[in-house]
Image 1 (tube, rainbow, N blue to C red):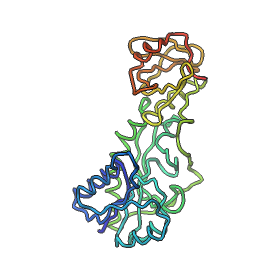
Image 2 (cartoon, rainbow, N blue to C red):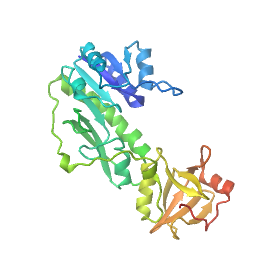
Image 3 (cartoon, rainbow, N blue to C red):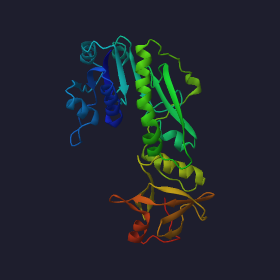
Image 4 (spheres, helix red, strand yellow):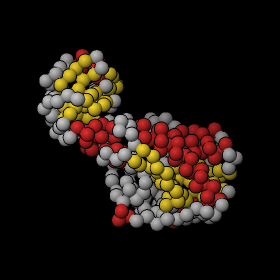
Amino acid sequence: MRIVVHGQQAFGRTVLEKLLERGENVVAVCTAPDKEGRPMDPLKELAQERDLAVHQPASWKTDEALELMRSFDADVCMMAYVLLFVPSAVLDIPRHGSFQYHPSLLPMHRGPSSINWPIAMGATRTGLTVFWPDDGLDEGPILMQKTCEIGPDETLGDVYFNKLFPMGVEAMIESLDLVREGKAPRIVQNLAEGSYESWFGKKEAELDWTQPVANVYNIVRAANPQPGAWTTHDGRELKIFNAARGEGTGRPGEVVAVDDGGFEVAADGGSIRVFRVRADGGKVPASEYAAQTRLVPGDVLGN
C-alpha cells in the first residue's frame, strides 16, 4: 500500500518508525510548518534521515493542498497527532480514505485537551480512538478503540506516556492492517452521548483551594506537566507539579506544614502535599522554594 503519514512530534515519529521497520511503502510525510526558534519536529527529522519527501502546508483548506494530496496517489493517509484542520475533500482522496488517532474514548472528550479533562473530572478510565475524520470536530466514524485505567495518583504525563502513547502507536498499526484486509469498521458515533471540551489551559489549571481536596488534586494531576497547575504566593504565580493527598486541615489555601519533603496546603476536607514547584525559574523541590521564600505554616496561597 502507498501510505501518507501526517502528524508531528514524538507520536508521529514513532508511528513512522514502526511503518519503516515493517517495510511499508511510505510515499510522503506531512507535518506542521516549522516554527522560528524551535527545534525541528521529530517526525520531520526522521523523514529527512530516511530520504522521505516532507510537505508542510500552512493550511489544508487550499486548492494547492488538494492537489498535493492527489499527487501522492496514496492508498491511505495515517493521521498521527494532527492539530491542523484537514477538510474532508482532502481526507477522502486516498483510495481507502484517512484515519486518525485521538486520545479519548469518542464521543467522550472530543476536542484538543482530551487527556487532561478526564483526569480533571476525576474519571478512573479513559482510552483512545482511531477514527475516520470528517468535517466535524472529532465526529467521524470509529475504526478502533482501546481502554486503560487512570490510577488515583496518575498525572497527565503518566497516562499519556505510559499508556495512551504506546497503545496509540499499536492501534495505528493494527488499524492499517484492518484497512489492508478490508475489515476496518466505520461505526457511527452517537454524539448525544458524548462531550466536547475546549483547551485545558491556564484558566482551567488555576487552583481553587475552597474546592474539595479531591477536585484540587485532580486539577494538579491533570495539569502535570502541561500547562501546570498554579496558585499565587505573595502576589506571584506559583506552579505546582508533583504532589499527593495529605491529611492536614486548615483554612482554604493555608500552608499547614513545611518540612524537608516540601509543604502542605489545606483545601476543603483535606490537604495537598507539594513536592515540586516552579516560580520565576525552573522546577525546584518544594522544600527549596519554601526555604528561599521563607514560606511558613500560616501563610495563605491563592487570591
